[in-house]
Image (cartoon, rainbow, N blue to C red; front, side, top):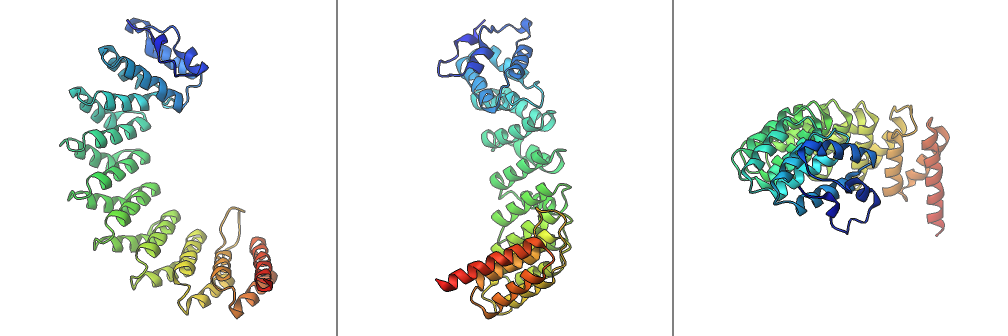
Length: 344
């Protein structure tokens, strides 16, 4: 039997004090259920959850009952942070316990709590990277876990810790092109661009996604990756011009226009293209938060060509004729700033 009332005095928190005062460890008293009830009663947030779990684990690490107690804490509902830190301290404090690896593998693959699975993945890759059973678990989760956040975490860990493994690149390529969730595809693309930039199969995947991924946020992100990572490639400029002209989503067109202005404003044809987009893009505003490609083009012209003789005339035209109030407001502001800069 031990008393939770003797936690270190540095926990200067009334909530924490009320939470643990007078507790005794006794399996028959349902301590975990008491802890669960009290954590809800006192609103045990992420910071306090970590403090109390780490304090208990550190102060009674040599008591075999604590490991069992931490395992039981994994039963907390998904609204609690307690199970996450229970996994973490088990992995950190009992790394040499032969059962710990088995437990983490089980948690990573079958726990109902999404964040517990993610945490188990992270702990497995940190503490058992070289163990022969770890990589197969991570590969399986990256491809087949039913939660996108777990697949994303597994993709990141695969790319970071098994970069050279022959199966890693094909898995990342496959997920970049075919995972059901756009956030997983984006994570896979980021890893491809960062870690396999020079691989001959990476650019074709990136180019294909920029044109044909069915999610606009993926296409936007991939266009930015192309412009920044393959700026000098002979096919990049034409692909970005095509997306700026003909993508069916205004955010993608805006991203392409922004990258075109930023990366190729010194090219002689770029200004005329931006003028064309500023006048002819078909966007019709539905919501205030949306991005208008015509305004994006105007912003690029005002930023990179403030002294060009066509700039003032274009801004005047948009001030008087653009159907979008926000574009007219921007044209007015840009004209005022242009006049002020010329006066100074």
